[in-house]
Length: 157
Length: 157
DNA sequence: GACTTTTTGTAGCCTAGGCTACATTTTAAG
DNA sequence: CTTAAAATGTAGCCTAGGCTACAAAAAGTC
Image (tube, rainbow over all chains, first blue to last red; front, side):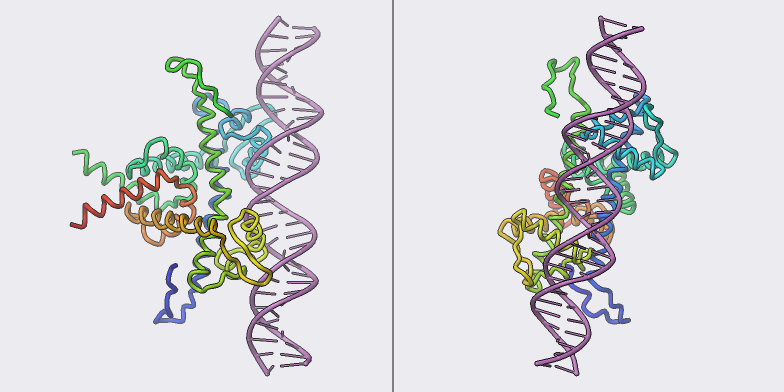
C-alpha cells in the first residue's frame, strides 16, 4: 500500500518510503513501553483518591497480576521517578506521577466518550479504551474533543 | 479470577469490581501479544502482493528493526502456523496467515477512516492507527462501519 | 573465475513483564 | 501474649522482542 511518492518533482528528497513506515512502528512500540507505567499510575492515583491507600496487593488484584509482578513494576515506577514507597507502607505518587495520572485519566475519558459517540456500546467502549488510549496522540485527542463539542452543540439546543 | 457469581443479585451485589477491571487489563495484554504478529503478516502480505517477494531484510527495514529481530519473529510466525519459509528463499503466508492479513488490513483501513471522519489529520490518523488498531474489537469495528456509512449518507445526497 | 557486497542465518546479551516458590513482616484472632 | 493469617518482599525462571557481533551463503562485479 501507500503508493511510493513517485519521484518527487522538486528536490531529490529521497524520502524512503520504508523509513516513513518504520517510524510508524517505532512510535507504536515506544507507546507500548510506557503503557504499563501509565496504567499503574492511574490506578494508584485512583486508589489514593478513594480509599486513601495504594497497597501492592490491591494494585495486583485490580490489574489481574500476581503481587510479585506488581512489586517489580512498582520498583520500576520508583526508578523512573513516578512513585515512592516505604517498606511495608503503601505506594505514593511523586508530583510527576500525579501529573501523568491526571493526563492519562483525562485521555481515557475522552477516548471512551468518543467511542460512545460513534456508536460503540458502553461496555465495549470501556473495554477497548483500555488498550487504545495509550496510542492516541495529543493531536488526535484535540480532534476528539472538538468532535464531541460539535456533536453536543448539534443535538442539544 | 473466575468471578464468583455473587450471591445476592441487587443489594450487596458483591460484583468484584477488581475482577472486572482486571479482565480489562488482561484483554489489553493479550491484544498486545498478538500485535507484532499482526503487523508482520500484514506487511508480508503487502510485499508479496506488490513486489512478489517478502525478504527478511525488507521486512526488517519496513518495521524499523534489525534483520536478526525480524528473522526471530518470522521463526515465531512459522511456529504459530502463520507463515512458511525455506532457507535463503523468501517468506510466505499460510492460508491462516493470509486470512489474518486480510482481516488486519480491513481493520486498519476502518480505523484510519474513522479517525479521519472525526477530524484527525490524515498523517496523524495513519500514525495513531498503527498502535490503536490492535485493540479495536469486532463490536467496535461494526460500530465504526455503521457510523461511517451514516455519515456518508448525511453529506452525500 | 575470483572477489566484493549483500543477504541470511546464528549466537549471545539485555530489558520488560509475566510466573511460582519461599522468606519475612504486619496484622488480626484467640 | 501467642499464634494464625494476610501482606509484603526476594529469588529465580520463562517468553517476547529488542540489540550487536560473527559466520555462511547468494548475488553482483570485474
